[in-house]
Length: 155
Image 1 (cartoon, rainbow, N blue to C red):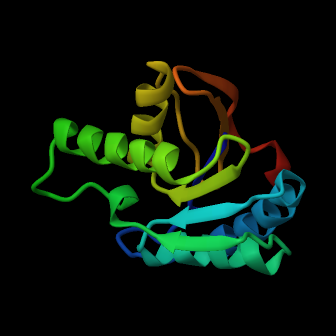
Image 2 (cartoon, rainbow, N blue to C red):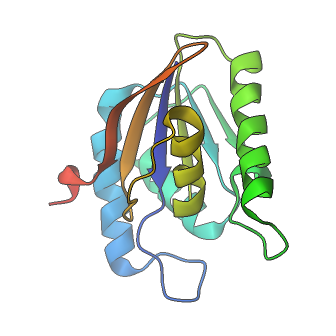
Protein backbone atom coordinates (compact mmCIF):
# COMPACT_ATOMS: atom_id res chain seq x y z
CA UNK A 1 0.00 0.00 0.00
CA UNK A 2 1.23 3.46 -0.83
CA UNK A 3 0.24 6.04 1.79
CA UNK A 4 0.42 9.70 0.77
CA UNK A 5 0.24 12.12 3.69
CA UNK A 6 -0.72 15.66 2.67
CA UNK A 7 -0.63 18.64 4.98
CA UNK A 8 -3.29 21.24 4.28
CA UNK A 9 -2.10 24.41 2.58
CA UNK A 10 -1.31 27.70 4.33
CA UNK A 11 -4.11 28.86 6.63
CA UNK A 12 -5.23 32.22 7.94
CA UNK A 13 -3.81 32.73 11.45
CA UNK A 14 -6.29 31.59 14.12
CA UNK A 15 -8.92 30.67 11.52
CA UNK A 16 -9.95 27.44 9.85
CA UNK A 17 -9.58 28.61 6.23
CA UNK A 18 -6.87 28.91 3.61
CA UNK A 19 -5.08 32.12 2.75
CA UNK A 20 -4.86 33.27 -0.88
CA UNK A 21 -1.34 31.81 -0.93
CA UNK A 22 -2.78 28.58 0.48
CA UNK A 23 -5.28 28.39 -2.37
CA UNK A 24 -2.45 28.74 -4.90
CA UNK A 25 -0.47 26.07 -3.03
CA UNK A 26 -3.49 23.76 -3.14
CA UNK A 27 -3.85 24.18 -6.90
CA UNK A 28 -0.17 23.31 -7.42
CA UNK A 29 -0.51 20.39 -5.01
CA UNK A 30 -3.49 19.06 -6.97
CA UNK A 31 -1.54 19.15 -10.24
CA UNK A 32 1.44 17.44 -8.61
CA UNK A 33 -0.70 14.61 -7.23
CA UNK A 34 -2.22 13.72 -10.62
CA UNK A 35 0.68 11.35 -11.31
CA UNK A 36 -0.05 9.40 -8.11
CA UNK A 37 -3.31 7.80 -9.34
CA UNK A 38 -4.95 7.93 -5.91
CA UNK A 39 -7.58 5.26 -5.20
CA UNK A 40 -8.98 6.56 -1.90
CA UNK A 41 -8.71 9.87 -0.04
CA UNK A 42 -9.27 10.38 3.67
CA UNK A 43 -9.69 13.95 4.86
CA UNK A 44 -9.84 15.67 8.23
CA UNK A 45 -13.22 17.36 8.76
CA UNK A 46 -11.54 20.80 9.23
CA UNK A 47 -12.44 23.38 6.58
CA UNK A 48 -8.80 24.05 5.58
CA UNK A 49 -8.31 20.33 4.85
CA UNK A 50 -11.57 20.22 2.89
CA UNK A 51 -10.47 23.28 0.88
CA UNK A 52 -7.16 21.56 0.11
CA UNK A 53 -9.02 18.40 -0.90
CA UNK A 54 -11.33 20.40 -3.16
CA UNK A 55 -8.33 21.79 -5.08
CA UNK A 56 -6.86 18.28 -5.43
CA UNK A 57 -10.15 17.09 -6.93
CA UNK A 58 -10.50 20.18 -9.14
CA UNK A 59 -7.05 19.46 -10.60
CA UNK A 60 -8.37 16.16 -11.91
CA UNK A 61 -7.70 13.53 -9.26
CA UNK A 62 -10.51 11.00 -9.47
CA UNK A 63 -10.38 8.68 -6.45
CA UNK A 64 -12.81 5.77 -6.17
CA UNK A 65 -13.84 6.99 -2.72
CA UNK A 66 -13.50 9.94 -0.36
CA UNK A 67 -13.96 9.67 3.41
CA UNK A 68 -13.97 12.27 6.18
CA UNK A 69 -12.50 10.92 9.40
CA UNK A 70 -12.35 12.34 12.90
CA UNK A 71 -9.42 9.97 13.58
CA UNK A 72 -7.19 12.35 11.59
CA UNK A 73 -8.62 15.61 12.96
CA UNK A 74 -6.64 18.22 14.88
CA UNK A 75 -5.49 17.51 18.42
CA UNK A 76 -8.28 18.36 20.84
CA UNK A 77 -7.53 20.35 24.01
CA UNK A 78 -8.36 17.35 26.14
CA UNK A 79 -6.03 15.03 24.21
CA UNK A 80 -2.43 14.18 24.97
CA UNK A 81 0.31 12.44 22.99
CA UNK A 82 -0.97 8.97 23.95
CA UNK A 83 -4.51 9.81 22.80
CA UNK A 84 -3.30 10.94 19.38
CA UNK A 85 -1.06 7.89 19.09
CA UNK A 86 -4.06 5.62 19.79
CA UNK A 87 -6.16 7.43 17.18
CA UNK A 88 -3.50 7.06 14.50
CA UNK A 89 -2.89 3.41 15.41
CA UNK A 90 -6.60 2.75 15.01
CA UNK A 91 -6.64 4.52 11.65
CA UNK A 92 -3.63 2.50 10.39
CA UNK A 93 -5.20 -0.77 11.59
CA UNK A 94 -8.42 0.12 9.78
CA UNK A 95 -6.44 0.77 6.58
CA UNK A 96 -4.96 -2.73 6.71
CA UNK A 97 -8.31 -4.34 7.48
CA UNK A 98 -10.36 -2.53 4.87
CA UNK A 99 -7.99 -1.85 1.95
CA UNK A 100 -5.87 -4.07 -0.24
CA UNK A 101 -2.08 -3.86 -0.36
CA UNK A 102 -1.90 -2.48 -3.89
CA UNK A 103 -3.95 0.68 -3.30
CA UNK A 104 -2.76 4.28 -3.25
CA UNK A 105 -4.33 6.05 -0.28
CA UNK A 106 -4.04 9.78 0.39
CA UNK A 107 -4.69 11.46 3.72
CA UNK A 108 -5.28 15.24 3.90
CA UNK A 109 -4.63 16.30 7.47
CA UNK A 110 -2.56 18.37 9.90
CA UNK A 111 1.09 18.74 10.89
CA UNK A 112 0.78 16.98 14.27
CA UNK A 113 -1.10 14.08 12.74
CA UNK A 114 1.44 13.58 9.95
CA UNK A 115 4.24 13.64 12.50
CA UNK A 116 2.45 10.94 14.48
CA UNK A 117 1.92 8.85 11.34
CA UNK A 118 5.61 9.12 10.55
CA UNK A 119 6.59 8.17 14.08
CA UNK A 120 4.20 5.21 14.13
CA UNK A 121 5.34 3.93 10.73
CA UNK A 122 9.10 4.55 10.86
CA UNK A 123 9.99 5.97 14.34
CA UNK A 124 11.21 9.09 12.49
CA UNK A 125 9.83 12.58 12.92
CA UNK A 126 10.55 15.42 10.50
CA UNK A 127 9.35 18.94 9.76
CA UNK A 128 6.04 19.24 7.93
CA UNK A 129 5.47 22.38 5.85
CA UNK A 130 2.17 23.68 4.49
CA UNK A 131 1.00 21.79 1.37
CA UNK A 132 3.75 19.20 1.79
CA UNK A 133 3.60 15.60 0.61
CA UNK A 134 5.15 12.65 2.45
CA UNK A 135 4.90 9.20 0.89
CA UNK A 136 5.34 5.81 2.54
CA UNK A 137 5.31 2.32 1.08
CA UNK A 138 3.67 0.10 3.68
CA UNK A 139 3.94 -3.66 3.92
CA UNK A 140 2.41 -5.82 6.66
CA UNK A 141 5.31 -5.42 9.09
CA UNK A 142 7.27 -2.47 7.76
CA UNK A 143 7.12 0.94 6.15
CA UNK A 144 9.62 2.66 3.88
CA UNK A 145 9.77 6.43 3.53
CA UNK A 146 9.75 7.32 -0.17
CA UNK A 147 9.63 11.08 0.27
CA UNK A 148 9.13 13.35 3.24
CA UNK A 149 7.94 16.93 3.44
CA UNK A 150 8.17 17.43 -0.33
CA UNK A 151 7.22 20.94 -1.42
CA UNK A 152 9.42 21.14 -4.55
CA UNK A 153 6.31 21.42 -6.78
CA UNK A 154 5.33 24.73 -5.11
CA UNK A 155 8.16 26.76 -6.68
